[in-house]
Image 1 (cartoon, helix red, strand yellow):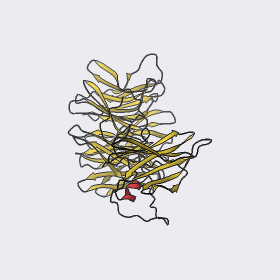
Image 2 (cartoon, rainbow, N blue to C red):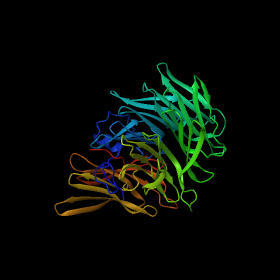
Image 3 (cartoon, rainbow, N blue to C red):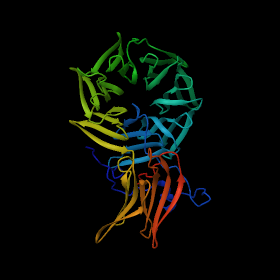
Amino acid sequence: MKTQFSPRLTVLPMIARVSLALCIALGVLGTPALPARADGWIIEYPDFLDFDWFTNRGFALDASNRPHFVYGKSRLFYTYYDGSAWQYEIADQTMEVGSHAALDLAGNYPHISYYDIKNGNLKYAYKDGTGWHVETVDSAGDVGKYTSIALDGSNRPHISYFDVTRNKIKYAYKDAAGWHVQTVDDAHNQCYATSIALDSSGLPHISYCDSSGMVLKYARKVAAGYWTADGLPSTVGGMWSSIALDSNNNPHISHYDLFNYDLKYTYKDGSGWHSETPDSLSGYSDTTGKYTSIALDSSGYPHISSQGWTLRVLRYAYKDASGWHAETANSNMPSGTSIALDTNNRPHIGSSPVDEIWYSYKNGTWTNQVVDEFVGRGEYCSLALGSAHISYYEGHADSGGNLRYAYRDASGWRPETVEKGGNVGRYSSLALAGNGYPHIGYSEFSTAPIPAPLGIKYAYKDVSGWHIESVESCECLSKVSRFVNS
């Protein structure tokens, strides 16, 4: 069962859900006027609160052990807990950015590497006392997937990522002169999650996967522009790797072994490379180890989060003096995990089950909370408070339905049909004008043979009744709703 802890998060809506377009039209947000269409409509693409590739560095703890998240696809979202409430910000307002986002913190200020889906660029955003700043790091082809970021002692960013166009692992860093980009490995078929860590000299160490053989690879920079790879066993599967360095600058890597369907932990010490299996459940195949993330505690012991595929859960494995221990942290199966340890070596994990961002932490027992979710489970209705006013969808998404509206007065609930016929009313969003009359944005779909989006519509009521207008036709699924804190 979900733990609901923010008024912005709903399964049954609890707060006014107002589309960005309607907020602008009704003057709710006070946004400067935008160029209008000939018929008077200002068109903006609604904000899809969805995400893609929640990475092994998508979550971090600050010095006060407070969680911070980055994720996105439609835009780049940044969410953090300030000690009393969750705060939600859009770090990059550009559409179609934010997937493959990775995070590091300078004090409480976030630094984020991420992928621009639309333009195929690597981007970097950071926040300081003056606000958010966004930069394009690499735009030479389709670049920027599978990012990972680390800050050096001067809080300058170092980023590992994949160049799809050239099939290369690349590395970018920023200094006083600006951005510098280097090729780490120019062999073909390099892909799957990169992970970066900086040693005590500020030099980068990167783990990644050679997709041609699905083997783990590791590279470190030993001089300006010169990279070397320490010879890992070629039989070690390396998908979804995550790297951490110990106090001696030795690498510790968690990864998924596709050959044996297990979570693997590979590390180096004075005698060479070693590989262990932290979490393998007898009798299951493809059981655990996907989407790994690793952190080392104050004694140098590894703690690893990963996906348990067959059991469809979030798994947590850790090592101590007695050996390996593994347990289920969350019963929802993630498609991405990111782990951090607090100052007491307790695990905190960010994860991404379908359409949701979760925060799990252990203090004796596991606590699991929803941080953010795609508008998929409450998207057919919207609530505004005046007394109470609700817009909602009546019918079945495949066979068609109607847009309904209800409000409550002293006599009880008073429902009515706003528009009927066809397939109208999905993804509605409701706002009340100053005079109390409702204004609703919603989607219209075809009904056969497979429901397809036809456009965005707008309905409003005045003393003479309901009025309906078509806002925009579309050939793509447009979500009208966006949570807006009142």
